[in-house]
Image (cartoon, rainbow, N blue to C red; front, side):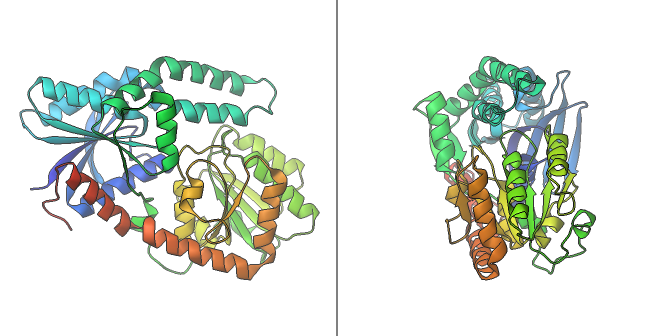
Length: 416
């Protein structure tokens, strides 16, 4: 009989949305491999239960929008009621594991169960805080004139302080353990919510680590196939087009490279509120022949398989980046900024080139090194892949998750 794990995700993990959803699905695959039975609890437009390859999804209908951590206080009772019905008369002990900003909901679930005499242990996986992420977006908009986007994020920061911060404080201070992938995340939480929080550290992986095997790159995606010069090195960025991701800096750095006569192709994948603005900037800077901005795609991995260089120019990450792990797996040489958890994943000059954030000249210089030195590029890519295997593979994640759950008193009964 496998331990059932109550996983509070808030957002529906079946949605193909971004890095957090990829992480959640990767978690489920690791849990199943480790011998557990993950049951996800999220809010939706409907109430139903769905069996998937990465666990069972329990959707609770909520009348509130959006289905994001921003509205966690409004959604809490619907998730708590859903879990309460699922547990029923089973006495436990039950393991409640929350992901991201929903830790307060996990603590509320445990309190409900304990009031009924049902034992519950709570673990929270943290990527940072909602407050830190929102302030990062506002920093990315500092150079923009006052606009609806800045006003929207100013409002979001106000609402975060009123409604999200108290929930996260309750969750992190009330959980039996707060699991972080990075020391930077631990520091962010401590700065905002103070001491008295029990931390543990563990690795993680992207869903691609479980689904993608080593093979030669497949068909070249159309957005890449049309770029010129056809045989020049390919740069790929996988990131939301939002103010904290630094993609404006990247586009300007690419314009510098073109002006200096450096040949390259580039593909910037992802959706977001700045997507059309970045497309317009590419057009204004005369980069349409060599830079593609296709928006969101169903699967980023075919693009990463074609990449010679992966670029992540973030101004703020909070933790690390799932897309960086996917790029390391795919064999691309990374260029990333020295922010938050990114320097904890790679070593400058060995498994990546690290650059100062918000610095067009520094980013262009690092890209130039890779574009003009194939030996360096291949050596760094090989080291990045080695780092992926050791720390971020499916096997590494599965073993670490089993270690954590065993330490919490939930030793695997049927490991695969």
